[in-house]
Image (tube, rainbow, N blue to C red; front, side, top):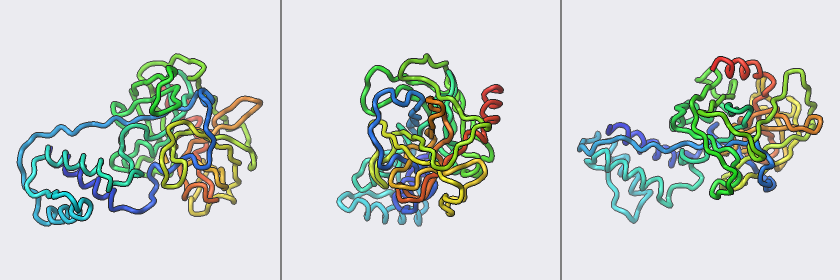
Length: 326
């Protein structure tokens, strides 16, 4: 429909004109080290599939005031091109949107909402653990919990290369923890794969920490992912990782408003930040890694504030009950 293409166009314009640092998919690896292949076999790359709008080439007229606003923006963004809305078909609006997305005037740091969007952790042969805000429209209207729009890439190391260890899995269900209208509360989600996973040396589940286990501040844990390597930088093609200390609640950034089932880690120049959202924070316990947290949010990256992580221990009952009933 015409409105679909128009809304997509307006969303792109709003993205271009926005300079705020909202919640978003705002966690990435900063100051990290390049990982070796198979070092984090439970790490999952969650890819969003681009869906082409189903539109008909039927002329229609936009309100004059809206046309003037969009034309003014286009003239400023593309001074060398005569781009005007005027009277357009939905198909033409779609082509214009593609111009907006591919033009050099569009920041390369803006999300394209396709390809790698978030990380997750394989916790058994058919379930992946991630963050609610990766799929929640309360984070961004372009996100979705429609399972058909996502794939889980297992055994991945290089996002652009193939080494034979990768396995792509369709997703049958995405279950976000309530409340759905509050992103920062219970920021956890479960993803059910369409088919069970065949474990290999490069694809293996991570054990989850239990409420009976205690981790003291100062304990060094690890976070890995493909996120940006510097604040407002570019995404890493290969997995990077960092080792960071757990922080006490009093050492958390007060502006992050950490709740009962969250904790903080980092606080130095190494941090997890954009496109690492949903990935696991893992700690060594008796020589074996187990997952303690999920990358959730933070203020800036690697600037001394520390990141906020969803505490797996406080949600273990929900995880087990949700998997059992689905």
